[in-house]
Image 1 (tube, helix red, strand yellow):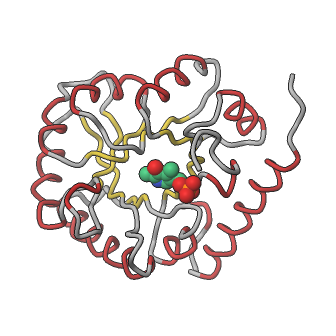
Image 2 (cartoon, rainbow, N blue to C red):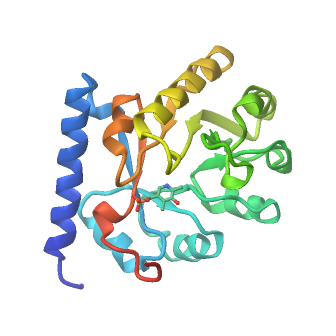
Length: 227
Ligand SMILES: *Cc1c(COP(=O)(O)O)cnc(C)c1O
């Protein structure tokens, strides 16, 4: 068994404290907030180490890598969140190993999935930027997309997801996302979840009602193959 990494456990603890403090500040129970630890580019061994530290929710954003890790981790009782852009041709495969998909963002994807043994838990991703190619449905197409998801028994819609634009104050962007969440809940009262907040903006996301944070580098350290 590899040694326990004190740095990793300290970073995890520090984020846990940060989340608890931000929740208290926002007057929200921390129990309604799930921290998904994003382990993209990191080896399977890091996931095992985080699991020993009590983490159960993991996020991956690249299909090949996610599928390979999932196949090696079947002995763990973890929840795998797919958070990256989805290639149409790969979506069925992603739905086989992912427990939750955060990045459903177009009608063609929604229609690609037929009836499942268990409906796929999903978030509809909204594009908060002005650029079309950033991933996420344009806000004016959000409700039609949600209707399509609701009409398909393959899905269990949990809520909305977004990434804050680089060029905007995150709190403002997340406030907009909260408005979209309210609109979605008019159609789908149970779809109350909001997936928002990363290493540099999770405090602002919590202030605007995020229920699922996607935090990578603050916990894992730098990603090995990037930077
Ligand atoms: C990588 C990634 C994250 C985590 O980013 P950090 O800044 O490392 O916390 C969150 N969401 C998505 C969609 C990502 O691709």
